[in-house]
Amino acid sequence: MNKPKLLLHICCATCAAYVLKRLQDDFDVIAYYYNPNIYPDEEYKKRFVEAKKYCLENEIPFIEEVPDQEMWFALTKGHELDPERGERCTICYRIRLEKTAVYAKDNNYEYFGTDLSISPHKDAKRLNEIGQELALEYGLKHLSADFKKQDGFKKAMDISKCEGFYRQDYCGCKYSLEQRNK
Ligand code: SF4
Image (cartoon, rainbow, N blue to C red; front, side):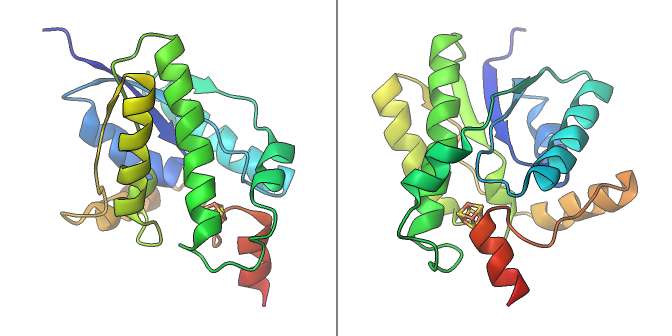
């Protein structure tokens, strides 16, 4: 039976591995790495290389979209001091989800979604609202989810430990790094 094609935005191996495993029975999943938020470059490379390696080792198609960091900084200007889950994060979710939706549309994927809701720091309701808006705009289906539920976060951490993945201690952007360092 042909499974529907899902373009899944992923942010790092720790978040992606469990979500990919969970979705593979129901979807033909393609991993899409687009994260212009991640700062600095060394951190970007670390997360990117590990996510790509995991996907290739597990025969999951992996696409990297070149991160447009200038655009990310321009769109989040004025929100440098927002707390995590605030308005800056809403903008950041939308930037990443919209790029995913555009790629899905241009390449005839039926579904798009993201692994981001696996994190207890991410607002699944807001992510799903943005996803639904974009689905309407681009004529796609959005995979609404809250992957942290049903012990999802714990299972993701177990896989991460078992695989020996790098575990970052800040969300990803310059401002979350500065907030961590305070
Ligand atoms: S804290 Fe995380 S989600 Fe929020 S803006 Fe920064 S990188 Fe994006």
